[in-house]
Image (cartoon, rainbow, N blue to C red; front, side, top):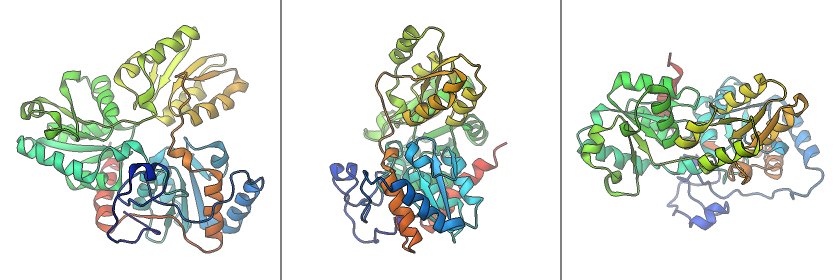
Length: 394
C-alpha cells in the first residue's frame, strides 16, 4: 500500500503516540500517516456551504461514500451510505466517477481501490483514520502464524477466512492461500465454503465474529475454537491444540464492540423493562448469547425499520449510528438507546470530520489530488482473488 504523500523511501515506523495523533509516517500501519495541507478551522461557520459548493463544482467527477459510523456532519454529503463492502461495491458501480471520496477508515478505502478501475482514484479525507482491529493482524505476524501451522503439520488442512475489516495485505494473504473474505452478513456462508475446502479455518482478525458464527450458527462447541495470540511464541498454542481445533481464531477484536459486556445487557434489562437487546456479532460471545437479536449493521437497521411502534431497543454497536437511528425512529415512538452507559464512538472513524472533508473536496475541485489510497499491483491481485471468491459464494 502506498499513499500520494508517502514516497517509497526507507521509512521508519513512527512512535505510537505520534500515530495516535495522526502525525508521523508509517505506511504499513492502519493507524495512518500524516495528513498534510491546511484544514479549515472546525469553528468555520461556512464549512457546510463550502462543502456543498466544492461538491457541486466537481459534479459527476466525485462520488462520496459514507460509512454508517460517520458523524452526521459528514454523512449529509454522502451520495450513498452503507457498510464497508456495500460501499466498495457501490464505488465500483460508478465508473464515471474520477474521484471516490471514502468517508470511512483506511481498510475500506483500500477495498474500494481494489474493486474500482485503474482510472478511478480513491481518496481518504484523513489518512490517520485507521482501524485498531485491522492493526491487530500484520502481514508479518500472519506469515509467522502460517509457519507455526506448517510446523504443527496442519497448514495443508487450513483454509484462511478473513473478515472484511482487514488490511489489503491480509486479504492478499488470504487469496494467495486459497481462502476467502467474509462480512458480518455472510460469515456463515464463507465458513461453510471453507470447510468444504479443508478441515480447519484460520479466521482473521476478529475472534468474536469467528467464534459467534462457528458456535451459534454452525453448531460447533467452544472447545472446537482456539485463539492464536501473535504476541506469544507459537501463538500460545501447542501443536496438539492446533491439530484438535476446527477454528483457529486470531486474537483480534473491535475496540468499540469489545467494550460491551454481559453486565451491560443485564443493566439495561433492569433499567428498561421489556427492552429488546440487539447487538453486532463483533461483540463478545457472552454478550451475543444474552442478546435477543444479533446481526450486521445492515441487519440492525432493517430490524429497527420493521419493529412495531412503541417497541424498546438497546443497540450494541457504534454510537453515531445508534444516535442517528434513535432520532430517525423517534416519530414512530420507538425507544432506542445505547447498550452501554459509557458513550463510545469509533475514535478513528470520527477522524473524518467536516474540516477534513471540506479540504479534500476543495483540493480536488482545484485539481489537486490529496490522500490517494493505492494498493500495489501484486497485493491487489491476490486480495481481489479473495474478494471474488466471496462474491461467488452461493
